[in-house]
Length: 92
Image: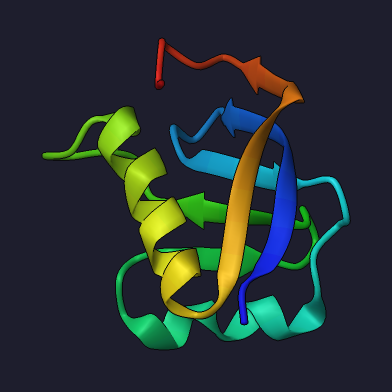
């Protein structure tokens, strides 16, 4: 069963990593997402999913990848009208 998780903010941080923050603040179990081995992790301190600075992929590709990886473990990330886009090129 998919757990809907509205996205509060999408940001490219100062290190160039893509961060996807959740309205709910997430759950501690999200830390296990790294087990997928697909370069997406949950930062408990930030309460956000993170992808590394792009080398071959665009930020748009990484955003789609985060959505896919989280879907694979039953988390349905949702962009809403409240979602903020900070320091991001046109991703969608």
